[in-house]
Length: 483
Image 1 (cartoon, one colour):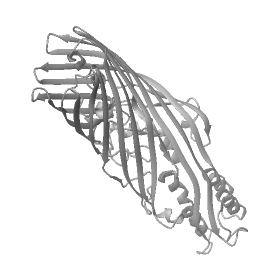
Image 2 (cartoon, one colour):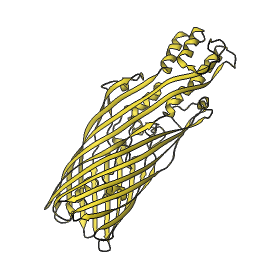
Image 3 (cartoon, one colour):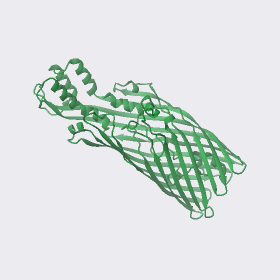
Image 4 (spheres, helix red, strand yellow):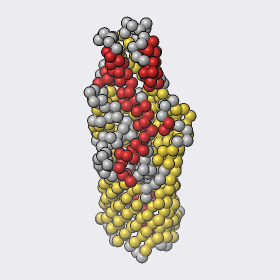
């Protein structure tokens, strides 16, 4: 049972509700959902995607953008493990988690004055939702599923008849967690001559994670005439182990160890921490071309536990314990070109996340080092987009994003698994009145299946396999205004 909590502590429930890196939300506006290729933007949303591009906004003045996004995700783990058949008569089980986020706001503002631009933003830069597994996870159940196997082995070793055994088990398991990172950015641009602009700024990121889960009421059905309750239905596993010790089938020391493993386990804690991200950017603008580049440095984050309950037996969950959980550095680059008298804009972008250089909790950090080829490479994304101006009132846009992750089986876990994906966004904008624009957008992400042949509970004889997949839908609405 301890292995279960080791892996929860190792990576916890880190997840991003949108396309992006492991812990990074690359979207910061409704515009992104309809066209993710924003790395060469010169609009107000460039505050995140291409901050140096703000220098090429058309007019001096004060710009503001207020956005909200809603995201809906499912995460499904299909696990095959022979001992599962003792709880439901099938060795394959499906565990489904749901994540919903109805309020993911962002506020972006910039003041352009001649060659200078001063900008700031507030956004959800990581996480943003609550993920709930009402029936727990396979790595929880796998530890309990081994109890009949181990008990039957002990009975055989004690010379008991072959038909004296346990054939069923049951348990109550649950997990709920949320992960959210708030980011506040401040920066400044300076335009050098007419074609070049540079940016320097920093983001303060505040991380907040909440976890609540349990494994309890573990029961078995012993068919062992030696025991007084043999033939009864499901009885507490602790009572069964005590009876084995009383009947001298197993020594008391071994019984004490088993009782500790099958006793109720629960965690209820919060983690919090913060870090500073220096950001640099440069933009080149010439006639119909625009090229933007930005670099976000690695963000050092130490998370501190505030624990209400920890009966897991794992000190990683104790109150006050610190866990390293950096936000990886990010390189973004993009290019755009205007056709048809600036009515049609084509854009392309690229993200590279320097995952291998971010420090995480001890277990995951070892996997990231790559010494045993447990990490194939850094994550990266390609984006393409088109935007067409219909008239003075309307424009429409669409775009796509491909995300590729350099992971191996050892890096994946039930708590934080990742899949390659392809996202498609559509939407448009409506100029309500002069200087006031409404943005509407929708993005669907299709995730590839990832088959893990080496889950943490894999048994050399009994095997073990997991198949991961996700679904994701996001809706965005935003208002832009220039004073």
